[in-house]
Image 1 (cartoon, protein in one colour):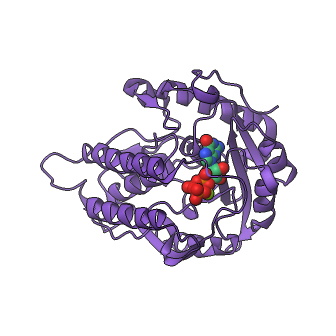
Image 2: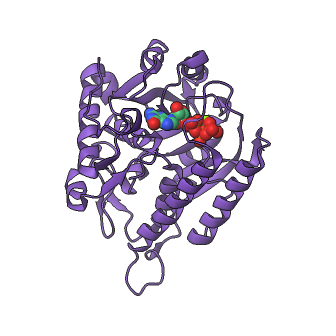
Length: 337
Ligand SMILES: Nc1nc2c(ncn2[C@@H]2O[C@H](COP(=O)(O)OP(=O)(O)OP(=O)(O)O)[C@@H](O)[C@H]2O)c(=O)[nH]1
Ligand SMILES: [Mg+2]
């Protein structure tokens, strides 16, 4: 088996209850090493576009297999590779994904979608992919819309492009879900000053580099952390109309609406508060604007080729492969599932 079997703290269903960021870094590093050991050059020389999917117990009814089959081999003329991060799946998610041609990173301990995506971003950067597209393993997003999210990034018009169900369409009639999407979009728009209509759309494209520049600590509900982090770092975010279907197979891993909503709200407010602390004292804003696209703590040297975090002029430690900062912070990360 290519993955690692990391020790878990022994919480419900074997899920860890508390884990430090140091542990997280060690888990990520071990998983990344195992990934390279399994795939060698394929892992180190990825094509320009990495499609990153977090998958947890998505084998049922062929979900993950069908999703991978429908993914494009090229997007906007660039070759793609599919990276699936399965952490602690108890079914055949990893084996099925491998059979369908994905590069699979297995992590023995279940940490959540956010931690899986963070690791997937790191693998993409380590393999020199220039662009990352994310989608889900449950078939809720339309692969034909991948080029729509990637095109503005390739054109240099945005650093991250997210699909928006508000601008596009959504199948669900669930009033709580619809209201939640609206409330969080309004909240994030108010907090960041940029008009956002959908903060939790799983189909996104971004320059791979930006995932190293923002702080990603959330084990599960990471979409708003990434979005708020990117916005407060002064990166350019664009939305495009896109479709979200109802989940047709398997079941949601995020819990019931109330729990989902409460935890998501916690991430939105917590991230905004954390990023606020990065502000330059007395400036009144996150940091000084640089030609409308960059701010004071934007990376000054690209690091996607090496997987190392960017050199930064100010601000908090970057995400992912920065063990030193993780050790300094030594924050306890509560498992939020
Ligand atoms: N690796 C990994 N992936 C996860 C985990 N939890 C969820 N995912 C994946 O993240 C994606 C989104 O999870 P979902 O449960 O569909 O959540 P959602 O789409 O926000 O909610 P629904 O609309 O209810 O489906 C799917 O591909 C899941 O398999 C996890 O703990 N680990
Ligand atoms: Mg889903």
